[in-house]
Image 1 (cartoon, rainbow, N blue to C red):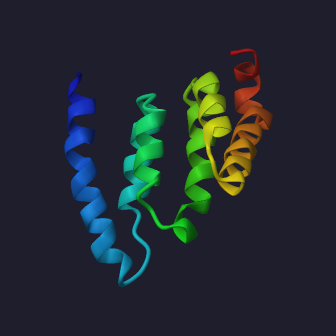
Image 2 (cartoon, rainbow, N blue to C red):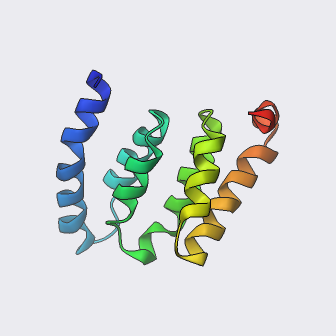
Length: 114
């Protein structure tokens, strides 16, 4: 386990505790930041697990962002596998929209073949 992975593993329970506390007073970015870093490291399952602990009304954009970020960071196959494994049709659709958006962006035109 590298240092970044260890740091994220240590940060996750702290970030989720902060989310639960702050959620009572408004939206927090701490979980979004954690999820984005998990995706950058290629830990799509970890990002999905973290998102699973977020209230449905707050994770709509996050599901799409995770899928998009996964493709942008070179993890298209993992993103597709994750998206199609989502039980909620709503979450699955959002993840697939995120993937499509990343693939259609000019920067990611080379990602289509990955």
